[in-house]
Image 1: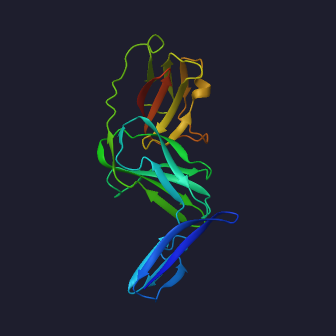
Image 2 (image 1 turned 180 degrees about the horizontal axis):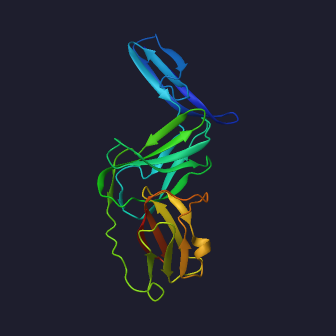
Image 3 (image 1 turned 135 degrees about the horizontal axis):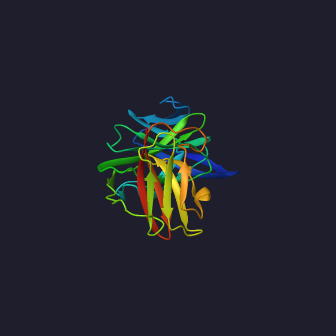
Length: 254
């Protein structure tokens, strides 16, 4: 004899999708309860019977890329992609990465709009065979999804170009280290195909200067972020892309 519990969640008006199934073979003492077992603000469904217990947590997000097995290069820009499910309610999404198989995590981005399902990430310039990416959905509580397996990050190995970037493709940051301001010299700039962006050490986009930089060969950065506030001390990455080429420079803010 077998009893079975099938769990569905609403995906729209009169529309449902199976979210889980649990069979209790050889017994008829199946019980189903609802409770916030892990105290994360969302209820789980607990099925039990014949000394077996199954806990189903409602899925809020599913990481699509990178999800394990990929080999990434430091300072490359990749698109972190995820799939959203509602319910549960989502107010914002945050992204994190680990280079030690989940022992510790650093922040990539927070307060991402609930409608977004991708985020451009500048891969940190490190070497690690045990990297993970984690997406966390916040609503009344929180839900998370982590890469199914580890991925690799290889150092960039980018050599610094020398000379005047206005004569040959390149990017120069001076002064570096900087205190209150620095000048970004770049070129050549191709309309509609160029970008000049600044990231922090975790790969989070701090400032996009592309609109201000368009058509110019030199731009002053006064260490301000998107909110107009002065960015903290640390190592930042300036990335210039144009015509299918890219140049990257580290700048130290002291």
